[in-house]
Length: 185
Image (tube, rainbow, N blue to C red; front, top):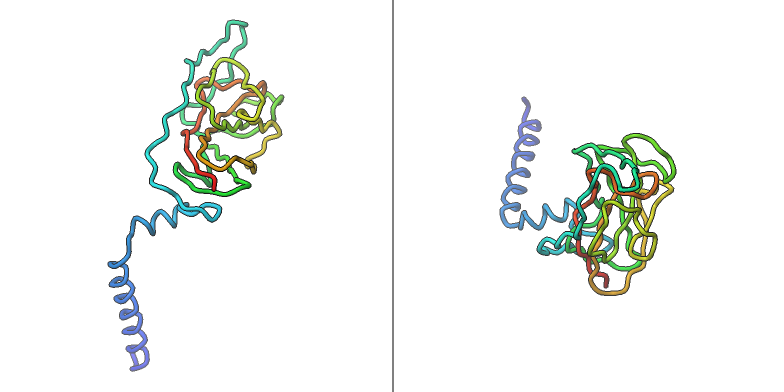
């Protein structure tokens, strides 16, 4: 190894040592949060206590009408892709829908292992054995959308996702996300 190669190698080692020494002075938890979605729409992720889940009626595989609910795999999960509990955001609020263990299909399409998203805004109770209503609190995404933007009044709001079958009825078992609280500036 010639002299310039030795200096280059020492330079890389020196830089690595400086980086490691500098890291000791940083708040790794804050850096981790920033890296894993701590900043959202110009807002900060809070360290909020978990939000109380919405009340969910017990899901039955067959409704009193004889309708057999669409089965969901036990490992199916629905979640927010860009928001976390305690996020501080501004309008319009972008909401990304994530789904694993199942696929997305539009309302009216009967296909095993699929469903479509519903966004629950400030909802305290969900009937697991009835079609989800369509209103300002229960937003339907029956065309198979996986994100939206919503305008919310400034203040705190709860958000939750639930997957519905071709008829907007929650699956059995219900595929529902964590209920999160966000603050709109």
